Image 1 (tube, rainbow, N blue to C red):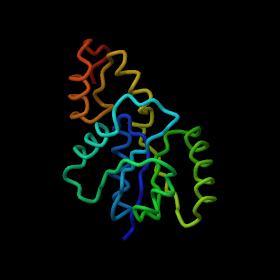
Image 2 (image 1 turned 60 degrees about the horizontal axis):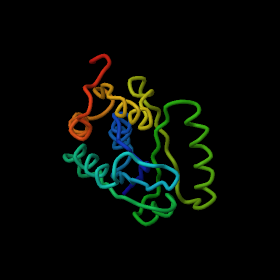
Image 3 (image 1 turned 30 degrees about the vertical axis):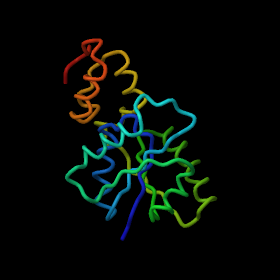
Length: 167
C-alpha cells in the first residue's frame, strides 16, 4: 500500500489544500493529513477545530485520515507508516522553501520520498496566511475555503459583515 503524509498547519485548510489532496488520491492508496503543531507559529484555530474541518471535508473519503502531531515530520511519517510526503507548490519561492525541507528530511531519513504537486491557477494564490488576514478584516471567504468552514468562521467572527466582491 502506498501511504503518503500531507503535513501542514492547515490554519485553516484551504481550497488549495483540498485540491492537492484530491489529486494526491490518484497517486496514493491512502493519505494521512498531519496537522503539525509548529512552535514558531501562533495559530488562529485550535488543532481540534482544524481536525474537525478536515474530517468533515473528507467525510465521504475513507482513504484520508487526519492526525495531530508534534515533532519532526519524518518521525511522524515513520510512526504512521508513510513512505511518502505529499506537498503542494504554488510558486517558485514555495519550491525553494520546500526543497530545503526535503533535503533536511532526506538527511534525517533517506527512506522517505517527497512528492510535489503544483497548485492549479485557480488556487495558486490561496494560502492559510492570507486567508487569516481576510478573516481578521471580514473579507469574503467564498472560493478560498470549503463552505462548511466559511459557515463556522462567520459564526465564530460575527463582528463584521464580509466586504469585497462576491464571486
